[in-house]
Length: 193
Ligand code: ADP
Image 1: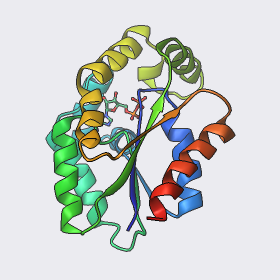
Image 2 (image 1 turned 45 degrees about the vertical axis):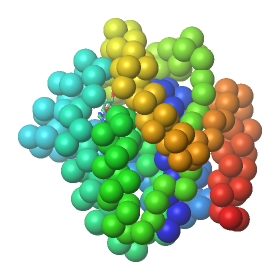
Image 3 (image 1 turned 90 degrees about the horizontal axis):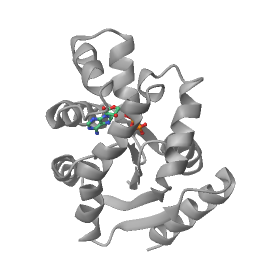
Image 4 (image 1 turned 135 degrees about the horizontal axis):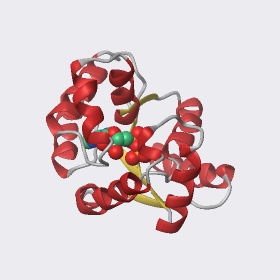
């Protein structure tokens, strides 16, 4: 198994690059944002609770997303590997993920960290809000709160993987193809080992 984390602030291009990476490497895409939006669309109790938190730009409780990821891993026993997108977002989630993957003898190979300036993130998210139908993309306050939440809690996840020398930073500005190429280079370096 070959497992990757695609990391970066909201609007850094994780969704776009994930689609391309899973195609190329045959990975199963696990996005906690997508899993939560599907709970909301199905109007489950979990989804209704999560929506309140998401619309404020805050993080859904760790135990909720860890539970969702744990079920998704168990539901994909035949996967060649996973691409985690939007998860882990806190140090506690990172530790929980490592424990889940240790059970499968399949650790994280690399955390790919997309780097994009704050100004560019805000521009992209407001633009996405025009078409995405995502309520958290149309409100400037929510967008700013998500970026603040990223700095407050989520950057700690990069520190966590840095201690194992698993972080590869990639510039997330420029053409989609160039960014994709840079991400593939980092993956291929680790796959050959
Ligand atoms: P973005 O990349 O734009 O932040 P996501 O689709 O990854 O969007 O997530 C949307 C929202 O869902 C987040 O702002 C947060 O409220 C919630 N969420 C997604 N993943 C997690 C997670 N791992 N832990 C806590 N909350 C999460």
